[in-house]
Length: 349
Image (cartoon, rainbow, N blue to C red; front, side, top):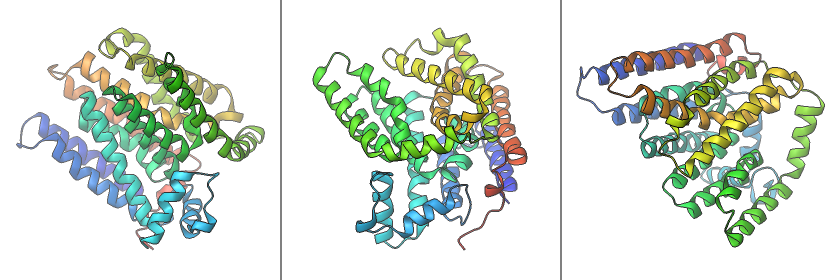
């Protein structure tokens, strides 16, 4: 069912986009976004045994009691599970919460940066929906808080931005890869720099056992991810686009320019690891999931500053980009080793 669902969502969104651009019906992109986001949230939230890490999240929810909370794993995610367990919503409540705030965070970030809302929505379905919202739920939650952090950073609210980043790293310790962004931000402010360092150290200490386990599982045992190759291709293309159009894409970003440059460097490293080293492809793939932010920024800026909405070929370019991302995810469904966990959709029980 998942493949048919994906096809349906994709073509409905493309059709809606054409209707809006051609002004066939007087409807706003915001309204279409909200409608599709609600449908996507409901489908992702009330699934059962769908997603590669489903059993782990179900166990986390079922053992959510104050005396059994594993703070070394993820303080924030454990706390959210405890809240919804207390409300007796089932694991569906947790999934509904994560999927809902993802589309809220995406909406706020895209609107702040003045990107094409429906284009980023289409791309997010390929990049985040199956692999993240219906797969790596905890990592998606961490990504969401980082998105909120970037939004506040762009609005020059640096303290609030770091607050959201702190929540992000206490949700998933892998978000520590974004630490240089905040170290650079407070480079000339010793007091703030010290706070950043202390919070980051606490996070690393709490998550040390998890980091050790991840190293043994992903690096020492050489776990291989075939899906990584499919997901690395669009990231590589975005890196190439950024190299070719960097000056134009970052012309109005000022301090935000460092963030994009850093994400670009991180993306290059991860893509190189995925293509050249099979033994670390799994961990590189997990970390590259965070780089969907880089893809959102590059694609959003490219269509805002290079293609531009007044271009007569703008709609064709949007459809081309959307189909390209669609084919990437569709190929992963067909050839990826772990896509079997997403192919049979079960609603509730």
